[in-house]
Length: 121
Image (cartoon, rainbow, N blue to C red):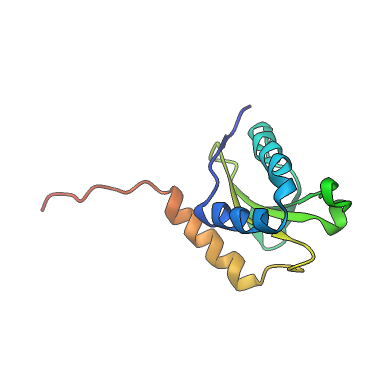
């Protein structure tokens, strides 16, 4: 099964910021996004059925997965879409706060839900 990958606006902004600091990671991030078409990878985040955390090695900088990048993606089995939502360097952020994850899920649900036209009264 092939999945549609739709990076969230937050993910795009954070990726641009990360690439300013780690410009050699561009091809690795692109390859990771393309690999998501095959399905979700990583581990489910406890308490959030839709969120998955994956680890990316920073090979150009001599860092393995344990000290590399983290990508938080949104995916529900009923939808054929995977949304990379957040990306950060482990050296910059240990774990995102719970409130950020709650807000991220709410934003993505709103972003993925098609607008319903107003019904005539």
